[in-house]
Amino acid sequence: MEVTPHEASPRVCVVGLGYIGLPTAAILAQRGYDVHGVDVRADVVDTINRGEIHIHEPGLPELVEDVVQAGKLQASTRPREADVFFICVPTPFLPDKSPDLSYVRAAALAIRPYVRPGNLIILESTSPPKTTEQTVVPLAVPQEYNVGTDVFVAYCPERVLPGRILIEAVENDRIVGGVTDACTTRIKRFYETFVSGEVLATTAIAAEITKLTENAFRDVNIAFANELSMLADHLGADALEIIKLANRHPRVNILKPGPGVGGHCISVDPWFLADAAPRQTALIQAARMVNDAKPTFVVHQILEQADHFEAPVIGCLGLAYKPDVDDFRESPSVDVVRHLQACNAGEVLVCDPYADEASFDDLHLTSLDDILQRSDVLVLLTEHKLFRDLEISDLEGRCLVDTTGGWHALRRAVQPSFS
Ligand SMILES: NC(=O)c1ccc[n+]([C@@H]2O[C@H](COP(=O)([O-])OP(=O)(O)OC[C@H]3O[C@@H](n4cnc5c(N)ncnc54)[C@H](O)[C@@H]3O)[C@@H](O)[C@H]2O)c1
Image (cartoon, rainbow, N blue to C red; front, top):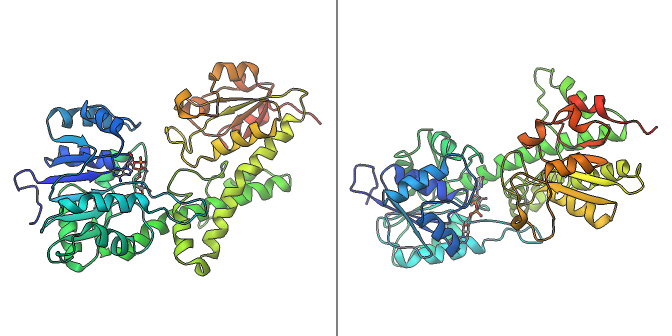
């Protein structure tokens, strides 16, 4: 069966209702598909069935409320029969940095009893090379069905930016990598029913490697900026000034350094390439090492400033892995704060407008006002708007550690001298 928007309410089952699955489910429901969302977390299912959401994403609360009220999206903890299945579950790494495919395996097995001839199965989770063919096909497709003639399977990566997911999930170009040409053709046609960007056809393995390559490319480029920031600090120079000057070269575009690299994409996905081809990924692995070492470097910078005080109070601004999101996964800002606390270097105060007491077991959060009043050392870890908007008068008289460059223009004006 081919799914086109002209058919009577084709049914879509989306497994995993997080940052990727829930917007995808809501967009498809808005396009007229009958969407059944599945999540193992009963609290997530209940929240969505009330027409509410459990994550922070602009525009999504209104859209989910609309489609739930219209009866086009409902959620449960179990899959059901559908024309199209999406797998949007997490793909983290294990402590040894090898990929953890347990969620993909569980999702594939969960849909298997409901898969029928004519169905499309789409893996959107960022996955190591060969996952679609070697994990999804054997676990999700019942043995009596042939892939490419009975059931159609493809890997279709997501490349959305949190904060713009509803726009980018529709407008970005997409890649459809089928297990066979027939899989690619069918699933490409399905994406074209709701994506306005170009839908590019390829193979499953090329699509898998492409997604990982995009994030490894970002990681390598950020590592270059982070290495430069450490090198400049060692030589007593201003890295941001050097980057600004170097970027005046018509073919140079150095990114901004930061406290490290976080989130569950850029800091994780390169490891999937390293795991798949350990001897062919020296640069990718080196970039991971550089970025993973950056939080320790930042801690040393902070301790140097704290040393100027007998009983220093260190105010840390930001915990999320990037500005203006509520995502703390693999966040280098969190690493820095935990590391500082373990050092017993003084009193460590922490604030993030997107975090509350429930976000962390081990971190006590305080208000920005409290931090501004009490801190000897102020550390900009995540450049949330709230912190970008601080003025010279808020920072005056404090030692500043600016890991992102957000206070670059202010720093020289307010930094006290201890020489
Ligand atoms: N968040 C992003 O910006 C982004 C961008 C591109 C790609 N991705 C990839 O998309 C995938 C999903 O990421 P996310 O950010 O949506 O993760 P998430 O953690 O926000 O959501 C995943 C959801 O899946 C649920 N889940 C786990 N196992 C399940 C199972 N067996 N059955 C049903 N539900 C299950 C979890 O409870 C959770 O609600 C990952 O592979 C990620 O790397 C994410």
